[in-house]
Image (cartoon, rainbow, N blue to C red):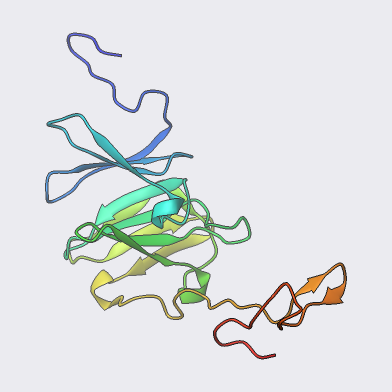
Length: 178
């Protein structure tokens, strides 16, 4: 809705954090609706969510590091058993790198509004049970990356399916054994 004095964007969304980056983009974190990049000139917004690589639709905080990466804290991770995660967005490539307890973060979940970039470039994110501090220049990537998955067997109606000419599974896939 608009009035002569006020303009409202993303009406009806639960806004948790706002950030104006060094390139003049305006970023909006939401509760349950992911991350939005807003173009003030055109009024258009682009939404980023879990399909784009964001670990959760519940954004708690947004802050840019000295190298232009946008760091996003979330209230929880992609799975309910995982506490809050941090995500680093490469704004040029449009890609996310996610960090969780596997990478050394405490599984505490991050709180809305509890984030800070200090004068020396350190980033701080607060949550349930403490806060996390780090120098983003020292963070290179995930320690383990994406997990590798594979099938170790296939059963249909409790009967093992073995690849072969008479089987519904004609051959083994790459990296599998028969």
